[in-house]
Image (cartoon, rainbow, N blue to C red; front, side, top):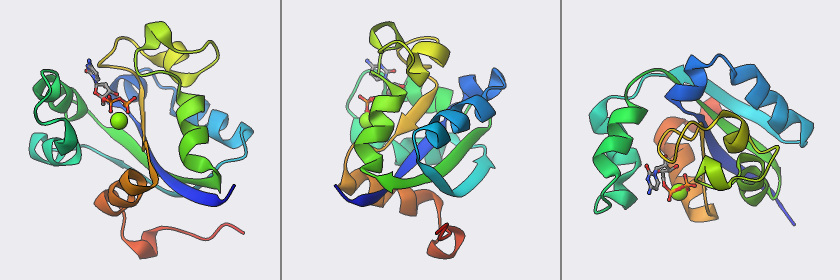
Length: 142
Ligand code: CDP
Ligand code: MG
């Protein structure tokens, strides 16, 4: 076990539902700390760059359109095993298959509009945090 940082996004559908606070509360209940935070609206181009690992997938264009359709909240979460723990708190990619009590089970509307994003590995977390934050925008909360 080690202290990790992971990139989390409240997607446009969840921002629209006005549940940012409830989602943040889930992170805090689980002992994860928000150490960086901003609300932004992605351009289509920036969404394409963020999700470039999915370039060849049939859902890529739709995903990038959705992710640039409205404001999102982007945050860095820190804590013990933050990367995998955040993935459990989020639940499965498809809200219909997400564990009850998970964020996607509660606030996901569909496979594409599933409410939240979370880095899936240390490598992704490092890239994704850098994608949105300068190092001076990330705070030590101890
Ligand atoms: O977000 P996660 O890592 O759980 O899943 P992913 O396989 O990395 O896919 C990234 C995002 O693409 C998902 O969160 C969905 O929003 C979307 N997606 C989709 O629209 N249709 C699929 N068949 C799979 C994923
Ligand atoms: Mg992923």
